[in-house]
Image 1 (cartoon, rainbow, N blue to C red):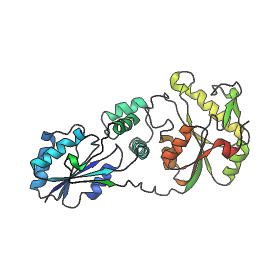
Image 2: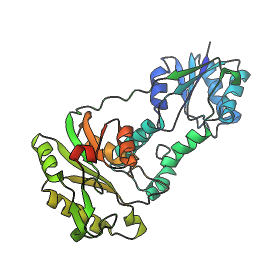
Image 3: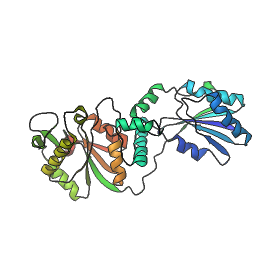
Length: 316
C-alpha cells in the first residue's frame, strides 16, 4: 500500500537530504512548493506514483501552516492514502548556517542583500534571513487532528566537515581589540585607532601556539555612507600593525537593520566561510567579542564564546 510522507521544516533545514535518504528503493520523491501546491499540481504526480506501485510518495517542503498542508491531505484522501508527517527539528540558527553554506558552495562567496534578492528570484535555494524569521512566525505545529496518520520528528545532524582540524580565534575588532583616540564609537581613519591593553601579548602567545587569527567585524557605516570600504580596510591594517600580529579580516559593509545578508553578525556567514576555507575544527575555534551579537554568532556556529574582558583582562 502506497503512503505519502510529508516532510516539513525551515528553509535550508535539510528536508531534501532527509527525504532522499528515506524515500526507499520503490519510493517517489515529488518536488513541490508547499506554499503554492494545489490539488491540480499534486494529483497527477500522486496518481503516477500509485500507478507505478511506489511504496512511498515523498513531498519535502516548508509546509509551515495548516492551510499549506491541506492540499496534500486532500489529495491523499482522494486516493485513499495515509499521510505521515515528519518535521525536521533543525533550529533557526542551524538553518542559517546551512543557508550560508549553500551560498558559498554555489557561488564561491557570500552574497550581499541585493544579490540575494536577485539570485533568489531564479535559485530557490538562496533566500534572505527574513525568510527564516517569516517561517518561524507562520509555523503552526502539525497534529494528527489535521488528518495525518502520524506526526513524527526527525533529528537534524550536521555532517562533519572533511579535514576540519585547524584551530583559530575569531576576533571582533571594535570594543574587543581596539578603541578610538577621539572617543568616537568606531574609527574612520587609521590615525584614530588605539589598541586595547594586553591584546598584543595575548594574541602573540596564541599565534606562537599555532592558532590562526581571524577577524570578523560589522562595518555598517560603509552602507550608511559615513565610511569608505577602503578606509575600513586601512583601519584594520593599522590595528593589525599596532598589534604586531597578522589577522585575516572579513567584514560586513551592509545596513545594520533589518539584516538582509548572512555576513552581518549575529548571522553566521563570516564564520562559516572561515571554517570552510581554513578547515577549522569547531571544537578548537573560539569567538572573542564584547557584545551579545558576538555571543549569538558563536552559539549559531556551535563554537565556544569568550568575553573580551575575561579573555584579555579589563580594558581600562
